Image 1 (cartoon, rainbow, N blue to C red):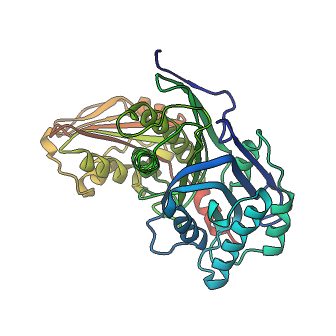
Image 2: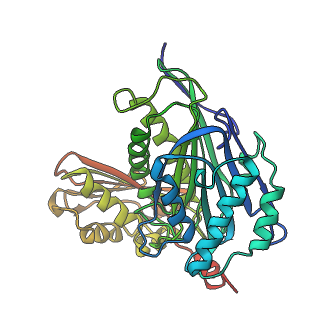
Length: 401
């Protein structure tokens, strides 16, 4: 049997077999928007998660990390509008109650339920509304789309994807949803993302494959240099597709498929950065090693000066080189080649004449690409970001007022 990978039209986190979801307007953030959702598998799942590296961790993160110690879970409850972070003992009690309420609703143990919250920090959850909302959630096969909307805070659009993979191990589906538009920066997890698959996956391998997918996707996007106390990426695998058990010996295709889903969602997050009008892609090749290539690409993508230049269609490539120089990656200026929107602006350390007006016009599009060739080794990496606009300041100057 040949390998086939295809995107599922209108695919979402409930596209894999056996997953249901639903959402309600619980009035946590407003009366007009979905803000509370549940994702549930009909069968127990092998599970893994990657969480924020911020020293300040929200109660749902701490609880979910605890529940994942046995590498299993079967449901996720998520709310937007309130992060339940920096809320003390009462915040932890609220997270525990959310897990318990969902467990009672769907017939699980509370330890089988993971919790995620996103929104304003330092504000307690309105638990009376949360309790009522959980009771009202109707779980359906199409509910993944509702869940994707309920997770949103300052997002402009829901972020969803699913792919079907046909292989010698059997056919399986991977689906995912993500949210994020601000407080986005590398070093995991930079937002909320829930992934599902109906493949049978070894528990230890699932953790490894998720970490690798996160490293090439969510850990390579940046919007504003901040990370949240709530950052969470979780994957649930229920095995209902009936595949052979996927592990480190036969899991190369599964890794590639999961990478594809995560990369799509990560680029959606970067494209939807608060106030953003353009997606920036920074590709670095020829670094001493991959770690240095990742460092260089992420530093350039997160440079406020370069991001502002992109917003103004200004081909000021000196800001690219300056960010590279402070990244910590080894650089030999005399061997450096730089391309901006496929126009060579620097060759072996020397400037290359180009049409400034023409390049400025090309920068007015919705996507801007930067390619750097360090010519020092085999390391390569790609990072994604967005331009920095006046609207970003407007959004974040009135977030709670």
